[in-house]
Amino acid sequence: MAEAKAQTPQRIIIVGYMGSGKTTLGRALSKEMDIPFYDLDWYIESRMRKTVKQIFDERGEEGFRKIERNMLHEVAEFENVIVSCGGGTPCFFDNIDYINQQGETVYLKATPEVLYGHLKMGRSVRPLLLDKTPEEVYAFIREQLRHREPFYMKARHVLDVNLLDNYGMIKESVEQLRALLGI
Ligand code: S3P
Image (tube, rainbow, N blue to C red; front, side, top):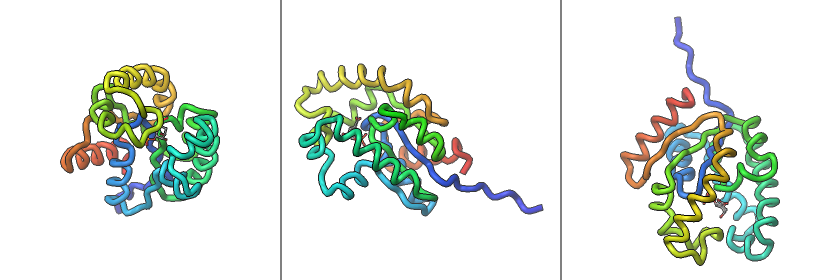
């Protein structure tokens, strides 16, 4: 009897805090599986022809969140795609319930230490971390993660991730992700 071939879910939607590796893993998985990858921040930037930072500057966080929700509704309609959300996406409006309906959601769970390890270098492009000292960034991550984790934990799957700073680590996490999703 022919073995049943694992079906690729129509959409895989990745959530997690800034610096958890959503884009890195999403892109690596998309290459391996040969299906398109959409990073929500990049999608917003190309649709709006503005950087996320410019949108924050011009419309504040509230304005950004409205645009983010609208753009989420566009990409989460595409079929056979991998989507990585922004760190805040699941924590506003009914976004987490919506994406749970739209696809297989995965939370990339990392400790504040791991997140800080990633974020201390890339503060300048992230409006929420701009102008903070390294100590303030660490305190901010801990505090915000406490508030956001209940939203992230509503994702259907949870994958513990560590620093993804070399090819071997990324490959290992991609394999874990595939096992988790059964693909
Ligand atoms: C944000 C995360 C960012 C981006 C914006 C706000 C957040 O995305 O959407 O700066 O609220 O956590 P990444 O998680 O891809 O950095």
